[in-house]
Amino acid sequence: MNDLEIARSIKMKHIKEICEFLNIKDDDVIYFGKYKAKLPLSLINKEKVDKAKLILVSAITPTPAGEGKTTVSIGLSMALNRIGKKTIVALREPSLGPVFGMKGGATGGGYSQVLPMEDINLHFNGDFSAVEKAHNLLAAMIDNNIQNKKNNIGIDPRTVTFKRVMDMNDRSLRNIIVGLGGTSNGIPRETGFDITAASEVMAILCLSENLKHLKEKLSNIFIGYTYDKKPVFARDIKASGAMTVLLKDAIMPNLVQTTEHTHALIHGGPFANIAHGCNSIIATKMAMSLADYVVTEAGFAFELGAEKFLDIKCRYAGIFPDAAVLVATVRALKYHGGMSIKDITKPSVEYLLKGIENLEKHLENIMQFGIKPVVAINKFSTDTKEEIDAIKNRCKELNVDVFECDVWGSGGAGAIDLAKKVVDIAEKNKKEPKFIYDLDWSVEKKIETIAKKMYGAVHIDYTSKARKDLEKIYKLGFDKLAVCIAKTQKSLSDNPELLGRPKDFVVTVRQIEIASGAGFIIPITGEIMRMPGLPEYPAAENIDIDENGNVVGLF
Image 1 (cartoon, one colour):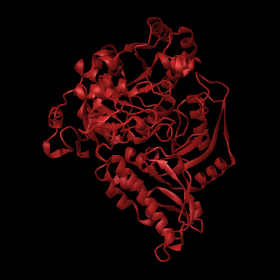
Image 2 (cartoon, one colour):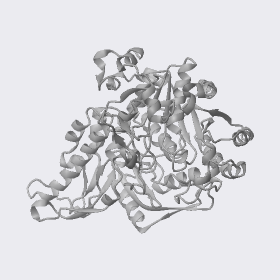
Image 3 (cartoon, one colour):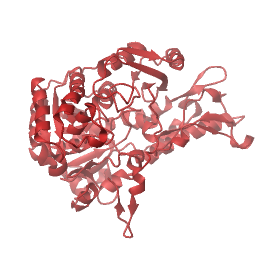
Image 4 (cartoon, one colour):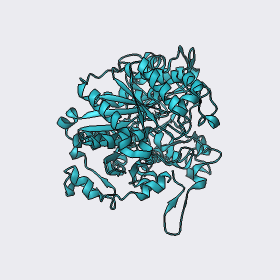
């Protein structure tokens, strides 16, 4: 069976049963039908958060299809429950961009999924829509302030950097001109759209602690300048209150279940290549308040999502993982060894050994944070024993524990050994947070440290535009913010063509955007796009619905 057929074969428990197991009172639950609910922030308990064990799941540099990091996260959480550890998995919400684009859904796979998979992949409980509306409300209020003669603060439209967003891959909207059609339709200016997952409002939602904090961070969104060179923020046009109202329900995490009825909190969905790639602080802390173990993932490979998870999310939230699982696949290692993407299902220990240096670099990256890694080999049916043994032997030489996992085919039973090792590491961990840069460092030093330590770069090059952006950042006093580098997920470098473990490369920073509300700046490297486009054959072509209302073609 495919993922959708497997998901439909599972008899789900009513969400009330899921809540009862967690001792959540009925009055504290906002139900969305039989199988979904939202939970109030009052369930967060700092004392319990401090005692809970947090497990971070990341991956090596992926192939275009992904390596099953979410699937392993779900399978590991179910395995931990199987060995008697009360566990919740905390994940990001899927974006419709990938769902209708290349990767498809983001709810796991096989017998390690979160359910109901159709609902979670399509709109879910309205969080993405709320983020989109709140973001675009600010965009509309900016243009309205520019348009009006009486109620305006003199915003210079040439300096406005805040774009609009939508949750869809649509390259045609990257660069547009608004305000055409005469004086009653606004002031013409250049702008564009980003995808909702790249919205600063999405980042703010995921980095907020409560409603008050959310409103404060929204008010700090940088918009541009007035004609007399004064900086303008969302608070200056009185937008943050209404934006917060639109997000009053979206700030609450969503409770669902896995294929084995393990509890799952799914909340927020920033991409890791163009944002910080983690689910919300609120959802993670709530999970840590309700369970002894929490499994969470960071988007794409370790040098992207996991670095941002640690240096941004954990730093701001005051949490830190007790163990890290690095997901690897035979096919990805062969791909990084130079094997053609169309041939990666064919056996080849030779190509695999050439590509294993990518795995080695990510293990080094994990250890730079003082975290003990475990490698999970996400098993595919085309893997051979010789290929699996080659990975195990190399990990043994590196003194790193490694486990073969079949969570797609066996659910939690396919990760029991991995779960036992994770518990062993987590129980011995002394929780000593370590970051690779200090916020007090200069912007250039922070960028250089990430690029050299995480990516392996030898030098950073700044375009003239990026240099001007640096000047603006220092002048505004934003140089002490965290750094969230936008970079391709296809390579350790900023060039998607450089596979394996590139060396002696230069990272080029094209521009630096300010996300002062979220609390970071965004150096944009290479040809990264904050509004992706659909592939030549988008997944949307295969998605349909039958006469009984059943979705088909969603994977």
